[in-house]
Length: 455
Length: 105
Image (cartoon, rainbow over all chains, first blue to last red; front, side, top):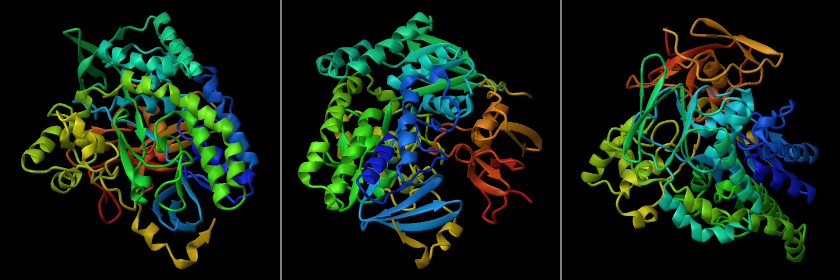
């Protein structure tokens, strides 16, 4: 499931090994978010960069592989067995297979602050998707937050001729100092380091104003659609007027599918997120269920591609196609690629950690965008005895809207554990239940025993 | 009142689709998502929450559900997961969907 770098690499490797493979993906084209639209038939604009263009190799390999690709397919249930229920064009189907690989990828960490629900405030990733899929370039946009993607989007905007009005960075000198001990290890990822330095150099050369160590984000609208963005920087209150405010504070694994499938999860303190527990091959505690890519742990696209291949090799071993020795032998390239991609991660995790006020935002902030639940209401709920996601959900409906907590789980957790950072992982991850995407009763009713097929 | 556009218009790629949004005729490149087409058309809100707050597409990847609109009479449609189609009739989703399946008479 999932046609990003992990899913595509795994599908191609499994098909090469002689397995029948079905690849389900929610988007209209394979590529995932990172290589979104790369195979759509038109040459990618130069400003998206060579790393983006490289995605077309994976898409082409997939097209040649004999893998059955179902696009526009939303998986809404995964059971042990394994059994997958998915919906496409309003009809649901059930597929059983001895091995299922979840490659659900990542989502941007929510960046809640007063005004983040206004039209005109979007995620930096959303703007990048618009650039990739529609060639739409942001106008007079301010980029705010921190993390590699923020720099990448800024550099792509500069190359496309629509540089950001300003970069408002939550990163402080303290974070950078705490990241420094991880720098020697990061030298094993020279490509990534050089790429990062190149992006920052480009932003500097373009003369984009940068505000570092910024805090106290707030946005208001003025009726004409303009966004007034205010924040504190170096003790001073700053105001920027823009048509678009793009925020980003790193990415987290998308775990609705893996949690709903009953896979055990653990707290990753460095990345401030829950992730499914798996071995180096992506095998989980649920027989036949594997995870790979950023949905297992955030390591980026090249690691995702490597873990997809590793999972496919182990599935080939488990299904008796190759021996364990052959698996290990064929895994060496992917293992070393994975090592190189992972080496920079501790540095990035420390340098771009989310600030406390994003994890636990001010009272008037809407935390649950669907049900319009504020941070104040959640704090009130906690003072009345709520001590976990479930009570917050049942008493306030936070997480009960159509996004099913994808936009608020992290913030509810942040508020629950505010001031007790060591407890972040001590609270159980919220339950995720099928259907993990909203579906119509018609899609449910259309299910019949005849609609079951085997991959 | 015209709301400021937040994006430069999508480049002309040849084939286009014409559809209706809140009574207005919109032309958009074929292949782009409805959410992209609506953002290119105007920076104004495309849905109103039950509490009266105004929203529009936020994540563009199917996670947030803030781009919900009514397409050809079907409410709760994710505009970011829907490609533009010739002749589609799109309306803002105001408040929660009605349980009879229609958001208006």
